[in-house]
Length: 68
Image (cartoon, rainbow, N blue to C red; front, side, top):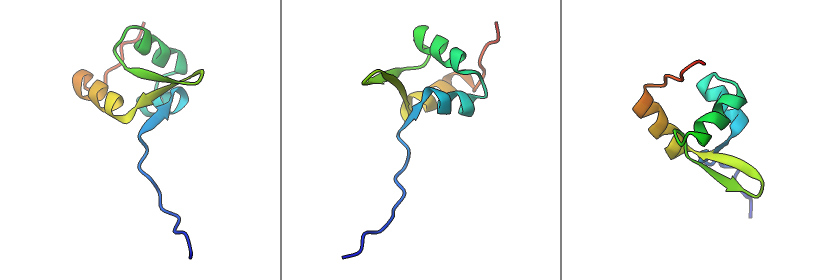
């Protein structure tokens, strides 16, 4: 019985991956989570951002991340 190597859709992102998608630094992602602009879940000691949360953030902000 051969197992097929299927690619599952990505449902969660690391802080690093989220920063890469948003084209910001990781510190900015942490700030967005602190300000409750981006919802994150804790997996052990690591933050994970769900695809749904990232999609909602992009839809409500138009992808604009404020620069300080």
